[in-house]
Length: 158
Image (cartoon, rainbow, N blue to C red; front, side, top):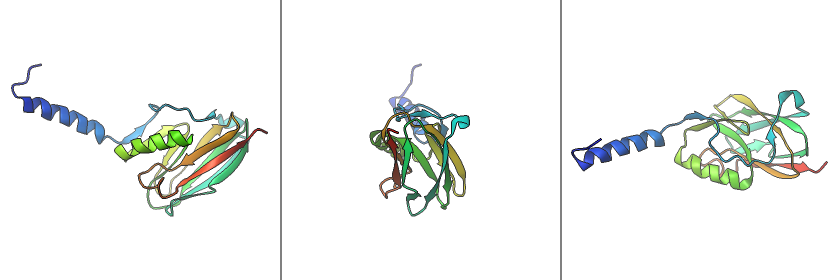
């Protein structure tokens, strides 16, 4: 394709970039998912943990203890008036994804270790913890992470 003016090419390129940059909505996959553990199977859930996501930028509870090998159903309720999310991962993974969320703030998630919730909405994440250590969770909406909307799952060896 030949453009008669350089500005025509520039406008076309910028339009394509803008349509991609401002795209929001839901996505599945696409991230390097090194989260310790693996998606859980509902039939294997050993325990359910209720988690409240509130507009004071806190999760309740913010510290959870599980045993290696447990499959946990996290039932997350957004009791606030703004969107929140629950993302499980390593601290590095969450920080990297937070930087991505800053670029695409309307992003919502449909991944095994993440859920986006509108105000008043409830959802769940089922996760099997396969390694002892700490797995972090956070709300990665812009400003929420920095305000302290995060917590951790301490996974004991047994």
